[in-house]
Length: 168
Image (cartoon, rainbow, N blue to C red):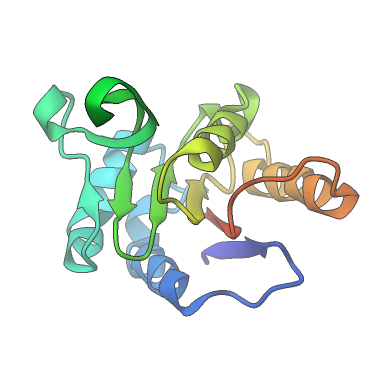
């Protein structure tokens, strides 16, 4: 079963994010981290066509032309000085999609994803998909516990309307 939690917990899940949950639910048998040991690129490959049908731009490979870059800083004559690469981006709804596997919690990749989404131009939401289980560690639970602390203490203000964490 797909797990999901939306932050801040004081807000209902925005309708623009519901379809992301449906995509992961429709592929659960293939990507279930309790039974499958897929890396993040393999999970992305599994769900990519569904996200493309939802009007997301999706990374299709490792070549520069296949990557999705979202601007962060602009410089001389409005040229992009810095951009971050993402797994998917819905331009109209301003949603960034990041899919993580083994390093989501152990290497704190989820923190990097949150930081990057927070400073990107024209991004309001982050959909962060992580393994429910990684090497007997409850990654999804640990990450959502961490985000509970972030949002409850309210000491760090993120420039995002919300974060949807999906555990696969």
